[in-house]
Image (cartoon, rainbow, N blue to C red):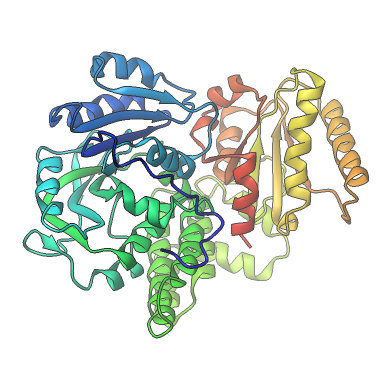
Amino acid sequence: MIKDRNKNIPLISSIDEKTNRPFWSVMIPTYNCANYLIETLESVLVQDPGAAEMQIEIVDDCSTKDDPEAVVHKIGQGRVSFFRKPQNGGATNNFNTCIERAKGQWVHILHGDDTVLPGFYSRLRAGIEQDSTIGAAITRYMHIDKNSNWRVLSYLERDTPGILEDFLPKLFILNRIMTPSIVVKRSVYEQLGGFNLELIHSADWEMWRRITVHYPIWFEPSPLACYREHAASDTSHLRSTGANITDGCKSIDIAELYLPDSIGPELSNLARETHAILGLETAMNMLATGNMSATVNLIRAALKCYKSPKVFGTFASLLANSQDLLELTAKLFISTDTSQILADYGVNGEATIQVEFDIREINLIAFPDWQSQEEFLYEDLTNLFRIILTSPQRDKISLLIDNSNLADEDVSLIISDVIFNLVQQENLDIEEEPAVCLLNNLNEQQWKFVLDQAHVRVVLQNQNKEIITKIGADELFSLQLSELAIYLRNRE
């Protein structure tokens, strides 16, 4: 159905309609969230119409901190199937795996830390069965915290159940749908493709807009789903780095292609302005907690997203409410040593934690296992540096490398050898080696500072899992090497 399908939108294979299929496929993607998975599963099982009507499956993205399979055995009691991916592929990739493995006519992707409320499946089924052209259905939802306390109720799109009218402009300007609140006909995914692999934080928003352009959407006004926000989630980390704003702007560019020229640019500019202001408002919240690094990251991302009098007015209000931020901004205007200034303000505005490295626009962090076999170690490093050296963004990248179990001199020799071989074998033209900082014998506060500056943890085949767990780096936003190249292209 889509003209000139984006190469990053995977095809979804169809299922033979002659086979017996359940009405629902409840697909639950998980990654290090087993502590919430019990509540998620219980919220589904209490509404279970039976295996003939509902497939329930956990799709685990190689969790490293917990064992979701044990939860499935305990809570599912044989009713819930479990599939563990052979390697971590990231949230967007896992969504697509969920769709491919779904056998039902309608697919519900329910995060492993979200829940549904009684009546979710029965009410939505009653609505969507009224019109065969409906492509997706949504309910009102509640934002909940780590303790499952209700916080904020989503928009009331209409007073009574029914098909949404004039919903497309609203959705194009701001994402009004959280994943646990929407179900999609599997044939729609087969027609439009899966989630866009270019996107990380905004892949869901792009998908909902793609669907809304082509299909009617049913709305149930009762709040029947809960979207959880907590510090360990990918969303929380992306917000602290500003990556959610950058990714959202990329999503806006992609979605504009779905609209006619008569309304596309206007709606997209409204979306960029809204997104930028949202980033600045989030920066205000980060500033209130004393997280100056996150505040600066969000401001940078917001001002790159869109520039308008309204955006600048919000930025001015932010400056007016913080003496520390106003001083920092003034120093950045008059100084050439921006890296040191930002480092000085890295943790609660104090310059007491010094870790010497070149803070740049894109700070990557990796934890190689220096004790692994030499061929595996060199393969990991070669693949990593190939991506960095061939990226148009290489001048904006700073690579932080943990070497807790090997001397700086030895690590420097290995890295130099890897880069030299890459340059010679692949005829790369580089004027200088990339910015690399070795991290050895850091204390707890120094690690906290470093992790606060890191935008992405690069997942290697052979890595020092002990130090990753010890310092809490497993909670960072992480990317496989295959995803890193896409991420860097998106930052252009």
